[in-house]
Structure formats: structure tokens, C-alpha cells
Image 1 (cartoon, rainbow, N blue to C red):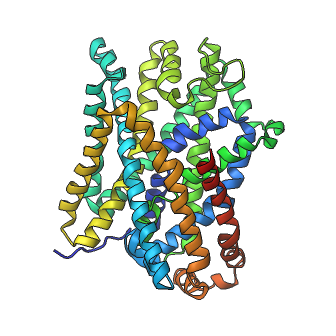
Image 2 (cartoon, rainbow, N blue to C red; image 1 turned 180 degrees about the vertical axis):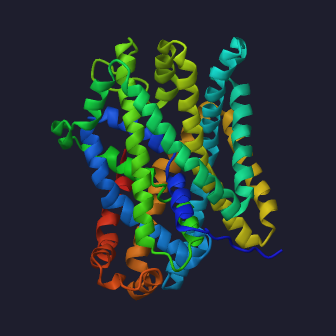
Image 3 (spheres, rainbow, N blue to C red; image 1 turned 90 degrees about the horizontal axis):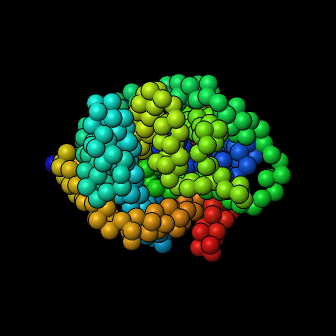
Length: 450
């Protein structure tokens, strides 16, 4: 059966779907913990600068390549090649991005399964099912397996509906709900003892930290991963864009929404840490380093919720439900990337491909669950620390050096006829050619020499 490509039905639908792709654990969990570990307001200041210095130009590049190719990352990268060598190189980079996002999905679905189980735990506690509630929050093989499968199935069911009726429809529902939950949760947290100290630490920069090279490196990495760059997902979403849409404008809107979520998450999580400190929960060690940062949402925050009396059930449920939403908006983009590739290569019916690819990805997740100690951290390191920055560097080089400038301009002008005279076009081509490769190259160098 011939594969008919879908398309976003509205600009708002695309912005919310692409922002949902970018929004996830990296924004709700990663950004606040990075901020707390790297000088609070100083990290926020550097991050906000870098999201527009690196994140926005790179996002424009990925979306443009995707829209130009109107295909999966492999074919889209090949479509901008200018020689047999770059054609083969584009294929390698495109397939690499598909493999990377597939690997990310395998561990992401495990973590997201934990979010579901922690969301259900207070419900079971209220129902006086304490033993079942403990099982939901204990690290066990059975718990991990059940909820990895549950989250994987949930993602498959959304992606199965296609671009307009699945991804776009759910993004336009889930993203506003995510913002609402973040705002309500942050406002509630501000009423707790110790929250103002956390708010001060988050918003007021300690400029002595700006000279710390680790802060710059961590902010650069957080900026990079915050927008899902180098995973091929944004390229696929770009391929579903209408040719008449202005990519620079849409990319700016996606960047603003994504940054807004990260900022709101910081307004919730960082004050929550200080509220926990006021309740006697250990947050920082004697050297000022964050205790158990990687497991913050599963250890420190539940300990805080336990101090809130009967409100703990509502607060805990709301917080982890928020994380489930953020995780789902990202996971559907992750699964859509290999689905688009298989659909276009095999020409099979989309529904069959979604089930085939989805079950394969979930099966890989289950293998990691059964071999958690040896595989979980390894897969995260390979995919996010080594492969993703390298793929993004390839995208930089293709957008800045391989893709002919007149063809880039022709592609952009389809959505904005007057862009050639704009400040954007005076800066972006040179910027993506020289500055972005240097910044991404620094991340690659740091990853391979660490």
C-alpha cells in the first residue's frame, strides 16, 4: 500500500507538537537540577542566552532540512547534498539520527513508566491499599516491566492515529494542560515555608559562578538537549510542515514555548528543594553539591510531599501526572521518527508499521529492564552523550557548508518572500556556518575527552 505523508493542519498544532517534542524530562527534571547544581540564577542567565545563541539557529536548520526533503531524516539529509560523497554522508547521518532517537526511546519509556506508577501511588494510598502503593514506588523488576509496557502502549496508540488525529490532536490538548499544571503547582509551592529562599536562589544570579567552565558546559549541553536537537525528531516534524509556513517564525515560537516550560519547571522544582530543606530533607552536601540529583524526583520530592499532610496526595498526583504529560509529548515524536523512516522505505501500511516499530522499541526497553544494571546507563551514555552531539554536528555542517546558499534561500522564501532583506537572513547563514559548528564541536570534544 502506498504511504501517504501526513501534514500538520495548523501552525498552532505544529508549534505545540514540536514544543511537546522538545519538552520532556530534560525540561521538567533536568533543567531545574542543573540550575540548582550550577549557581541557580547564574545558570538560568547563561541558559537563556544559549537557547537563542545555539538552540534557535540549530532548530531552524533541522526544520528547514526536514521541510526541504519532505521525508525521513535519511532522505532529507540526502536531499540537500551536493555531491556523491555528501549524499552518502547524509544517509549515514540520517540513519544515525533514527538509531539515536530509537535508543533514547528505549530508556525514556522506562523512566516514563516510573512517572505513571508514581502518579498512581497516592491514589492507591487514599484507597487504603498501602501494599500496592509501596509496590508502585519500589524499584522492582515487575513494576518496571509493567509500566514500561504501559507507557510504550500509550505512545503507540497516539502515534497510530497519525499526524493530524494523533500527534497534533494530543499535543494541542496536553501542552496547555502541562502549562496549567506547572503554574498551579508552582503557585502552591510558593506558599510553603522556605520557598522564597529557593526563588531567590533561582532568579538572582551569583556572578562568581559565571567564571566556572562547568557551568558553561552544562548550560550548553542542557540547551542542546532541551530542544531535542540531533535526534531526527525535529527534522521529521519539519517534513510535515506546509511549504507556505515561515520556518524561522515557527522555530522562534517553538523555542519560546520550550523555554517557558523549562523556566516554569525551575519555578516549581528549585523552590521545592528549599521547602524540603526547611522540612529537614537533605538537598545539598557539605560541598554545596546536589544530593542524588539524578533521582531527585523519585527520592527528595516524594520525601517533601510526605511532610504536607493530607495535601500530599493531591500534590504528588499532580506533580507526577505533569511528568507523564511531558514524557508523552516527547515520546510520540521519538516513535514517529523511526515510523516515518520504515513507512517511506517499505511503503507498508502506516498502522502496521506503527505496531511493528512500536513493539520492537518496547521489546528493546524490556531487554534493558531485565539487564538494568549493565544496560540502562550504557544506553543513555551512548545515545545522548556521544551520538546525539555528533549527529547534530553533521546537521550543522550540512546546513552551513553542504547545502548551497541559494537553495537554502529558495526554501526559506517559500514561507516568507521578503526574508532576504531581513536581519535574520543577514545573520543566520553565516552564524550556522561558523558559530554553531564551533559550539556543537565543543560539546562533541567534551564528550569524547571526558
